[in-house]
Image (cartoon, rainbow, N blue to C red; front, side, top):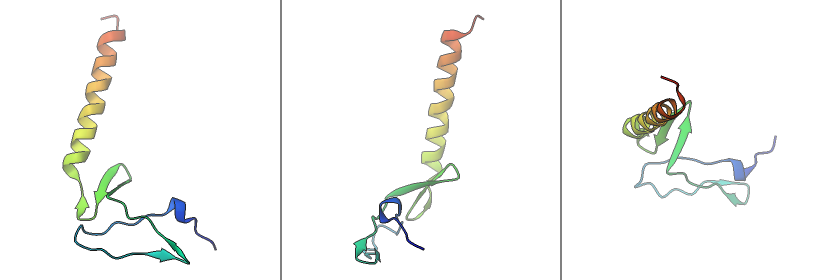
Length: 71
């Protein structure tokens, strides 16, 4: 099995400066990753970021309906 390092990443707490390698290539460290719709950071799920994102989408949908609805 081979892994594509360009498609890999890892999360750690902000104070951790561990470097992860696959073979000779360094795996990029991510600040955040979206898993099953939830933004995850090195310290856990970012519920505030998730809520803000969902509210932005709802506001966008409401604006769309207000502009293109016949009522």
